[in-house]
Length: 128
Image (cartoon, one colour):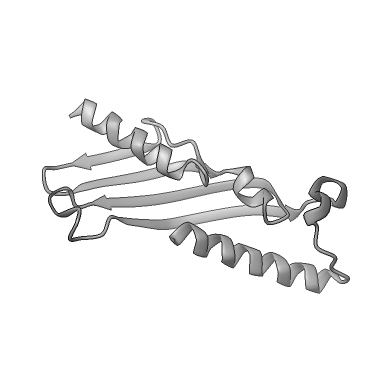
């Protein structure tokens, strides 16, 4: 079962590599039966590059994710990835670091609204 577990963790890590760091055998617990595989990922981090394209700099993060894989019905049932906990500490990138993609926002309130909008977009992108 260890070989299957390592294979599944490798595939999960590859699938999430654009968004998460720290998907390793040490951070994933797995229950892999013939019918259904269930994985829980703890102590992973959001990838700084996943936020950079939104003009945000990652200060700190922590995420917990669960995955349910219906082995015997892969074409009939969805594989479900659920974000159970997400902590993001981000800040706007300085204008010199953000380059040409930096948004011109006049007030602190506008910047906060833009951060909220970007985080909602990021979360929707991770769901899709």
